[in-house]
Image (cartoon, rainbow, N blue to C red; front, side):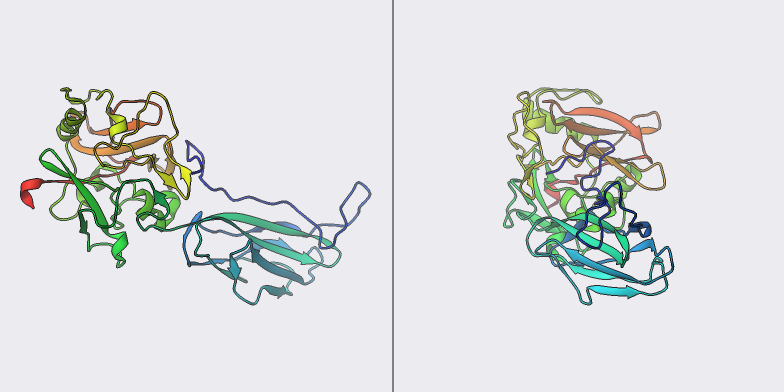
Length: 350
């Protein structure tokens, strides 16, 4: 899996450069002009198998107001709906003037979508963008979690109509049932990079106040003390609220892969065992203090809210790091940090 580290987007748009309409390569003596402006279109970083994605290119103009040919294509096996070439006669391409619809393939992986504007006598303007095709189903984009479709699970009927996207697997640890996958309740929280399909792969990112309200009926956010009890099951040692649970991180981690790429990088200090069967993946965290969430720490951190305030206007959360063997404790503002949620319930409530 590609790194999703601080300040980095897992798949970024790539402007592929400028190339001529013919085969001639420009050189120092070439006086052929370029079309004006820059080719621009928006597309999500992730898409579902078979999903139709529509791009609406804009931003290019003809210096003399002439007509332009605009076409789009996708790297095999992505297909583009016909017509694949549109003639623009007004001399410029404004947002909303034209669109091309791509159908994502059934195969998983990274694909390139392209759009080009050209005109006789001018070098063309173009743009290409990567999109990653994924599947939210268990055992598809995410493998190595140790979760099978016939394991104990509940159905959350508040969310998607697709059963596979509202299924939460759980395991019993001590006197609690724990979610084995991250909560993806879509009425609250944020999807990774604003791609809704990622809710069912990475889970959503919730502020503390959202996390308190997000679990299904009969389930709730675990307390700091319950995280400590989980740590004792792993290590046999007692810790206090806010203290590090030493040597327990590997028991939470699974050796997982995203579209075939390893999620938790190997570090000698961390022994990944998934002893708890919690199958924790490195979803990172989000800063939601601004207009749009800023996602950081993917492939490096997993972080989870507890239900316990710290007494200073913040709340405790638990987190692990790819290269550290411990479960750490932190406290954060209840409105600006958004992290993953694992819900629990008392086993006697079954």
